[in-house]
Length: 434
Image 1 (tube, rainbow, N blue to C red):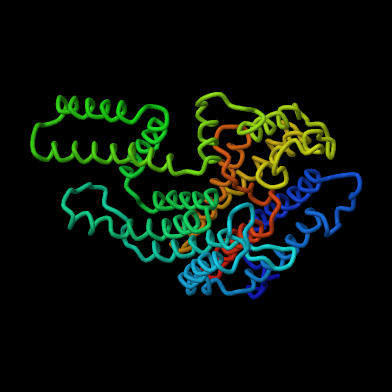
Image 2: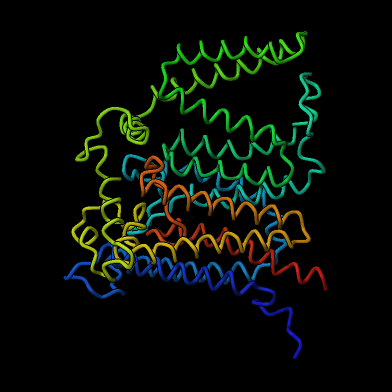
């Protein structure tokens, strides 16, 4: 029997939806385990976090279904509207929102809160897809020194970066939400897929290396070393005016990164400095203070062994040794109760979802859909890598939720919207073929 293209589920990739459902349910069960106590054992108790999460899950299901009902062209047409609307929402929250953990970034509705910064991710992705799909060529492969040529060849790149940097700076400066702000860096991956010159990647890697070195080595020593390298480079290049200008520009940029790093570090909050120091191993780490979170997280994950202690049997979790164990450190519950095998299953499902999205993105006939799909994959991968990385001590603790696992309605809804818009765009591909 022929399929009805008016069916809301027509063309929907069921594999992607199935993985999403599995992750959400597994996350809910782990939230229950993370805050479990003998007095409140009813998993449907809405006075507890797992009960509230069930309400958020129900809302997410309604949102997902609603997205599938709406014509895919709606998202294309209103991409910039969503971007502007949520930018405004993130500005107004400074005056209309309530302060939570020292940050005024939440709208409160009774016992529930909405964090507009979470929804800025899908809005930025829509705007990026709209903008980049209208560009014939993102950048040129050549680097030119003339300002006129630079603007001409890299103008669209600069505008695309502006779409990323505006919400990043707004969320960091106005709301002081460092974790949510740096997530927007993930969208740079999309630019590479759409033709960003590899030179930007090289410069980015070198800048990151310099950033770390500037935190370890005294600035004056590092600047002198860079100067020696710059002078020595004359031995390997043609000695002309162009070479001198290039070397001076590179040295100036490197010196700017070094000095900028120290300026930023000196103006960080004390707890942020401590997190960086802990990661870099600078000084003695007090396991009862600044090193407590990561140390307890490692103990919890390590104690799970190969197969785990069993569901609801995690002692580190049950006795609240791990801070934020239902949100940022939810992976500790997985490691302790499900062990190495369970942790691999969760990571595999997350990675499989990301790879599935990339596969679907590559088969899109629309540039807009492909670009949006890569944005979804980039954001999910960034969250996954940073969340697990900070849990096991490879990255600083910056408060990024594990996709579809961590407690919180804003993160669950934002991830759901982000994903299901792409699922709708992918389903629309079959209608285009007809």
